[in-house]
Image 1: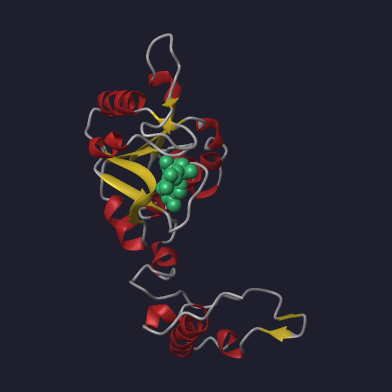
Image 2 (image 1 turned 60 degrees about the vertical axis):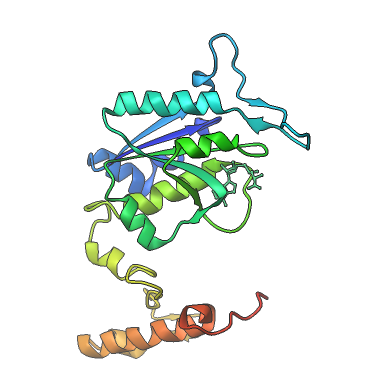
Length: 232
Ligand code: SAM
């Protein structure tokens, strides 16, 4: 699968895609990541990507032309029509199921905004506006990194053992993964539950199912249709 990210500061993403799962997936040619500098697509000799908002107000708004040119250039380079995503706090919220759906695309182009946001006309050039949560970041680069990683993990083969993704939280709907333990067996007087060392796989499976539900009730009761307690 091909990912293109268009950003004012693509170097923010370079280190991110150079480690761990994303790096390994590129090495194994399961994904390709192309980072593009928005300024490259501004008008010749006029590297201006933002301007004052019509109607007044604080801050600067990102102009539409560089994004439009970037979309066209990526399309030509990719030789296909990627699904084009405008990263925006106002978009549909990214969830695991949506990530699975996006991972079926051949190519995804992510447009990262900055400042007060992006001229609204860019949204109509895109297939979807996508948010990573109901809060506002200073820019779309962190959102691009989140989308890239979440979607790439759903590309077949990217997560080494499929089982390790399929037991993750949210993989099979609004459920959490079970608690995990490793060595040492005792840490600061807290012991690893004995059942996990019993070798009885059926008992372990049942224990994990119960504990996953306990965790839902403790941390995310909203997933069980209960009220979320106020954050401490
Ligand atoms: N004025 C905008 C608003 O009210 O939604 C916020 C602009 S924000 C400071 C600048 C850029 O950060 C946005 O254009 C978008 O690309 C990115 N961004 C901020 N929050 C985001 C979120 N929750 N999800 C995805 N992208 C986000």
